[in-house]
Image (cartoon, rainbow, N blue to C red; front, top):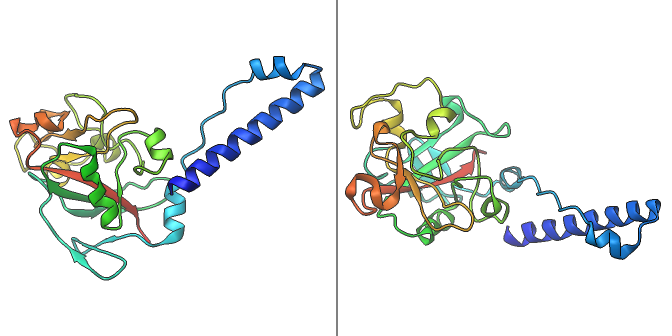
Length: 226
């Protein structure tokens, strides 16, 4: 996937430069001046979600467990609260017209390398933002599920509006499904942000949730539903 993304960026730069040179020739502008005034190449649209769905080779949530393409069944804790395996469309959300599996794998979360678990089990890490990490295939962006900074709320509450909330730990739709879940860091950063153990505690750095120094959390992985 990284090779495909790198090739796409290279092809985009070549095409953009060629088009700019043609415009310069038409206007009678020298190549030296043309190159010095070259406008920036626009970013590529992240079309990785559609490509992954086309390949149909990723793990799926079925009956609350995770089923790999090879028939292996995975079921494990999802941190302090939250749901191990769920699908977005059943709760009213799709991204680019597609349904997604969301898997929250419980572990002590301290370093981005721990998201390798996702790819080892037929999934992709959930991106915090639609940035270079998403375009390079390090993670998959399917909407703003996690804020990239400390705040008093959860981004996922805008993804799934109108669900039941509670100030009590383990109570309410959001607490039962997305407590203690973390997303892959933004590009150029290593800080991992997570939903706290209940909505009223907001979004926090992984080492600040509950004073647990990264324990009792879950990395969040995703894949298209086939």
